[in-house]
Image 1 (cartoon, rainbow, N blue to C red):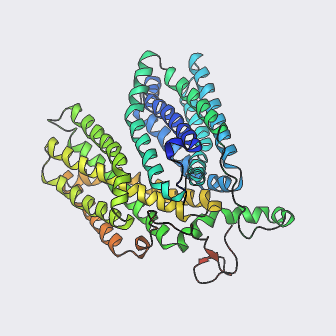
Image 2 (image 1 turned 60 degrees about the horizontal axis):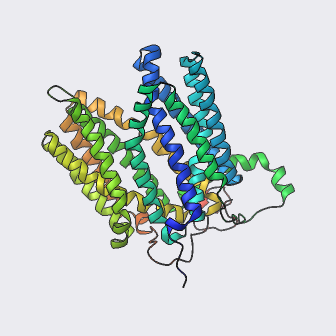
Length: 441
């Protein structure tokens, strides 16, 4: 039995990793510079909130069509076009800054165009990862990617702020260059040829049914998730966990930025959380080897359900930092196990559509967490809010323990025959696990 090539020697993986790292670093540098630019231009925090709101809406709206595009077009070409468009938008923005023609309207327009051109990149890169890394290395690959992202989230804002201090144009120029560097990495990729989708039809039939097929494509990901118990569990878990934890973070910031606190307290909260995620991503492969995916997810779920209510016991900064460190270190292992199992579960020809569908609900619900935290903190108290969010995590842990979907999570530590087939589509058009007249394409 031949062993797979180590990730460190896997040329395609290293190029894909580098492309993501370069584009993400540039985006993080520009992201921290954007509020500084808007505030210097308009002096309004509301205007910056408007920019973020528009970008969030664009990401949600463009998500489903982007998933269809990723499954229907060569993924390498999709990533190249995304990088090229984003580099062009950033370059135009830099020219506008140099010529002193930046306005709030231009910032919003650039955000909309960047959001649309960025939407297919993530699903395409995720689908590409599955094709260049064998199943038994998916956990390690996701752990390396998680460590990369955690490091960039820590370093990117510092780089952006330092560049902005030298010249407000520099972060956006670096962003443009990072997209070109990412495109160079993608151009050098040589991924294996994609398998032909099942139940394919003749070209003439596909052309005649192009528009109905496109409409069905927009819901194919949803039908797959509905038909697959494990994917349904993953969707529920990620939505509720992201909502609760985003609310917890805002609640803790409110507690430690009030009277008697120093700005350093808030900085420590963010820094400890980021450092914990980085350490957790480093430890994730070892934890995933020691524990089955289900036990690992349950261990993290129950520990989080205990640690969050414990934060309400004392508002001392050392106590909060200790609990944040504990939850931050353990969470990446479960996230990586779920992500790797999902990538293995989704058939190659559905990767884009299922990924974009699975990201849609968390993208809509997660921003509501900080809103809920603000309302509860204002009307009740921060400890009461933490207890309520801890209660939500307790219910989620109970649900995970009883969930049939989590019991079906594939264990990638064991040799597998391959990912399951796509769910069937019944005569009524709804996904079903009982009838198999035609596979979802």
